[in-house]
Image 1: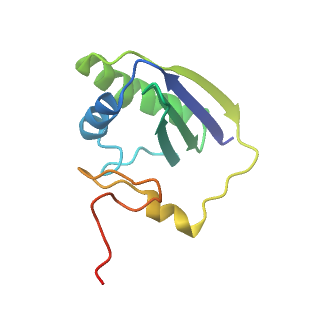
Image 2 (image 1 turned 30 degrees about the horizontal axis):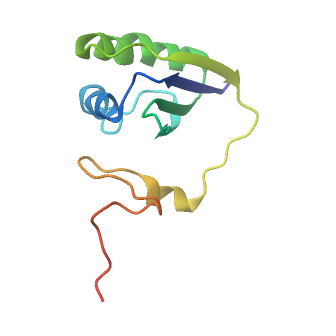
Length: 119
């Protein structure tokens, strides 16, 4: 059964997240069973992640074999995790505008920062 996993931790910063992206390489070496990943930071800088996985087993395999070892290696505190059975998921075509490429930041409008249209 597919699941929605919500990860939160006020102590995990953007710097931690970017270090994890590089170390775990989930974008270049996707984990089996991973469907969707979105990350955000609140006004105090704490992380909030929403993932969709094909199953709780696939999520647990990724967390235990890749995510937690990398977090321990980098000294990043473990997040709180809540897992729920997925009822519905939609990803619209516009989602591709919000994909952050290595070394670039997404702007509020979803386009990579620093990239401007030429006139």
